[in-house]
Image 1 (cartoon, rainbow, N blue to C red):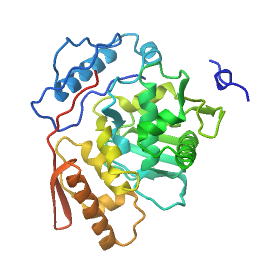
Image 2 (image 1 turned 120 degrees about the horizontal axis):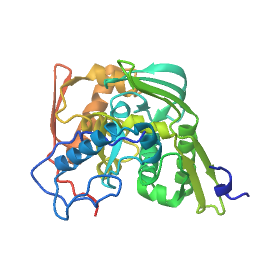
Image 3 (image 1 turned 60 degrees about the vertical axis):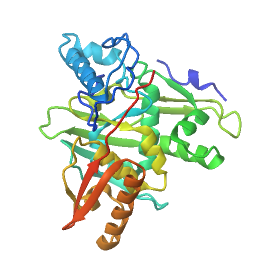
Length: 327
């Protein structure tokens, strides 16, 4: 088979605010970056880390050569422990909480969303496993210019996802990437002043040399996908928390993402969760049971400190965090 490196020839903006609960604890500072602010050797808490990214974003916006800068720079340099995800992905039904094997074919519809974005999607139904794969791929893309080829092996990706290292996982991750490639997404601000229109993955190629898939895989992203990470539109999602919930806990994963995208979550109704997460559960009483079970899991895993459901409204308190940035 032809080597995949020969198959292809050949708007970065850093999220401005990290929607996280923070404490006065001081995790170690991230390394300095030639592309952004330099951080002195020492300590920085997660709020300071987010403010640093905000300063970098403002510097990019004030650059008179903005258009060229967008094409040359890279994605936000988030850490391995908490990873950048657009709020429009976490506060909508773009990545559903369904778990049944049959996926819907979506013919280009407006997706229910509570973010400051309008979301339109066409393609095979996306679920929480697709979101996890996309986050893992974006983490691999963040250290090089957008549009460049990103090489990896399936083994490393599956290990990063926390999935079992078997043939089922190899087939699953490949199907997820193919599904993400065959998408048509429009996500834009409600005032129509900015939008991203395109696929979640531009190109995908692979060259399987053995049954485990231990050969080079490659993806490319559309450079304009950086528009998804501008302004107050990005959450730094705690990766290990998400992985610990397990791939079968799709509603818990969706709720984890949703609550993570709010510094102080406001009460939300069971009905609104049902509308947003696209769980496929037709019975609202049964869905309420699932929500309670998912909330119990989030509390027992430490993602939430407590929750209460009163008059069909869900009230949650997020757990204080002590985040250690990658060295």
